[in-house]
Amino acid sequence: MPYAQAIKEFVVEEFLPDVSAGELDADYDLLANGVIDSLGLLKVIAWIEDRYGIDTDEVDLRPESFNSVASINAFIAHASPRPTRNA
Image 1 (spheres, rainbow, N blue to C red):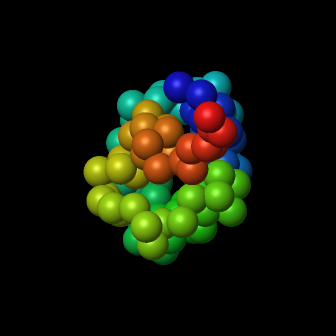
Image 2: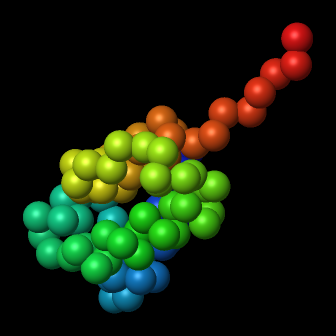
């Protein structure tokens, strides 16, 4: 999970200040457990746009893409702009 550490650090800094990034399990359900609410989800999406250059207007945003660190990681991996190769 190439983006997991950065995601954990962001989630801990913004939503779980009493938890270390190392303690946050990649599969912990952030939405169902109330860590991230609807306004928090907007903050996560804005962070992803800014940090990874993803235009979220161009991708399918589904709540299940933001349930956990692992699902956010998969979303970023899928939605990240791919570098183009010159043939």
